Image (cartoon, rainbow, N blue to C red; front, side, top):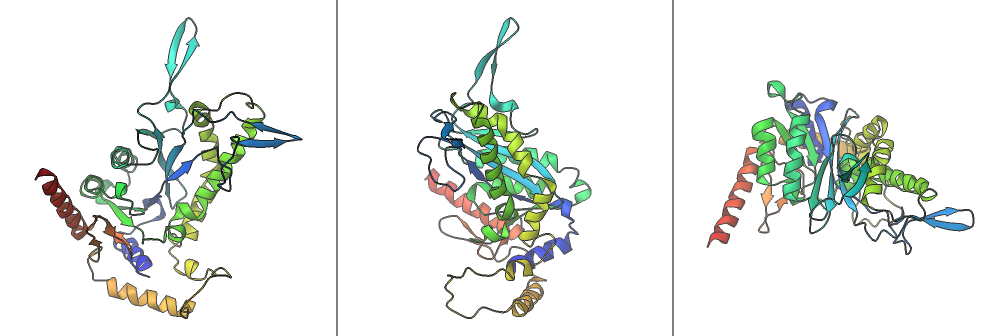
Length: 336
């Protein structure tokens, strides 16, 4: 209930509307797996009549990570795509009498940020910070005249570096709210609808490509070429709004989650509170946190991770000071 009480306070204190509430998260895309996540032994298969058509063997393909950013009003900000490797591959094509080297950079949706990582294709602190500068530019018209916007995501360590938090809040009036730990499957809008829809859309687009490109190797260029179609099929205004609605964030509705039935095989050790009892608890928590400094209950463990068991406003002064102290301690250890 702390989660919804904190969100309610943020919305009221800063007079937030749907256009100033954003959510981001990461999702991997590896077409050599089926929609159900099971490995495909021969690459991506498309059933057609009595024969199986496949798009190459994916031996030159490492997968990518997509980090979309959505707003409660149904719009989308510039997404981030992370590729594995030290540089983007290129193709040499002939244009008239000249040869030109082309990379996949022009293929993803317009305004996308492309990044590289040698270890794996996930988002790291450097890539996230580079994307953050683009996001700040995208929302600068919202933050004019000291107006605030709310950015919601999980507490993955690449998302909560001191550099990112200072860029967002101290310079650009962006409030960062970290979701409660182990709850993002229900409380994070992107997880409720869009990631499932986007994987299905990518699968369907790849299926359509199978009959055309069944004999040629399928590489990063081909994937980047179809990404815009799959992206725009998934990230529609309707789907984005439904994602925020199912998470109970906009419109703010704790009962959206509280009324969901547990699976039939779920084991519960104690009596569940009724919806009315949970609603009463929510109202009590609202009163309890009304006069508290946002984020004052945050804790940084010995490992350096921020404890967001109950959700946390990462840009609260008390939390940022904790992050600074932790960074100073780590610097002292490395300089000894």
